[in-house]
Image 1: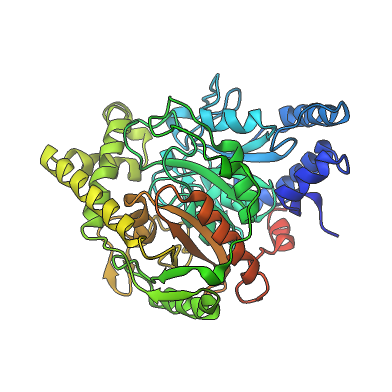
Image 2 (image 1 turned 90 degrees about the vertical axis):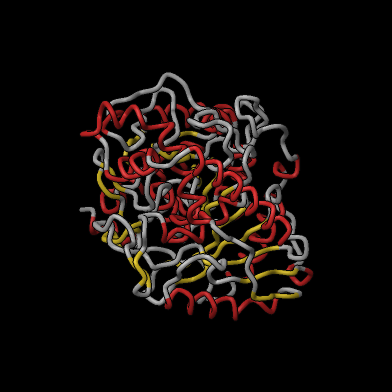
Length: 480
């Protein structure tokens, strides 16, 4: 019999609204699953059980009293530990904030609480989100739910693992170079990097750059869309937030895939992709490309994307962490030190060049979508690797010049401000989850989620392409 925690967020919300289940029952199911599985994977690093139980009881009373209910009323949620939560420990994965308990929520958290979500706990992240391997010196590493010795990627790794294990039905994430999408791909869930400003962010150290976004994660596209509807807002504290697309607040419509023109690329024309991952992608696409009107193999122009990304990423890291490096270097991990140190070596000329190149990439990719509805590519260039290894250092014998280079499939799309959703698509050659990115131009978030939702339903009918599920009994045994 399916436990409540294993049901979708959409179903749970419907059943809460019709009084068929109680928010208290849902919360207890999620707490029980977390207690049983989390010791094996270390995804939920700060729990909020006492307050969550009180809030679940209040949510139950609101239903019984006939009160107006929010979009997420009574749903447990995991909040990434990069997001500031009032009254709940927020460490940012850093020893500098090991015992930090903020007084207020940041906007993205405030919005989901206002819509009735109940924070079960905080999910693990690498220090300040730096690196696609979720581990830090406060909490240690988060293991992949399909093999806890392997990485769940990052930086939204804790959220991805919590979802895959049904600790919560929804979870938050954030994305600069792939932090929503790569963990989703590695763990068999959905991660959605939305367009800048769709979810207002008031905590970016450099507010006038659109590269870092907050977005939703779920086990299905519908669940992620439900969370996005609660996260989205128009708030002038984020300079990219100007209005709310009313369509994002509506249930997903059915898109006719047979009317769509798609582009397919195994490497975006810029990424080094493991040969086995390339073969897996081509095989999977071969099993579904016929459902579209046209599916042409082509890639957008990503000229100079690697250098552009490294420079602009460094601007953000220097702005956020320069003083921390000067005053607390002994408390910082290698990724923060590496980013800030390299960033300080760049000149104003370098930064100016990178801004020009990023603008060219953006405009070129927008032109690419003039005659293509959707682009599909792999989520990650490699299969999950041991979390004891900081990052991928070589692919197909080619050395990776920086610890981020293996993430080019995701950060290339960041440079173009694309709307990009990672969708589970079976498993790879090693039996680990495989993800594909459903990509549209900036501002196409509703359309991207609709296409992903329709494709998800098609993939679900094929055992080789459907969402994989971890062995929860094995994880429970490991945690004892």
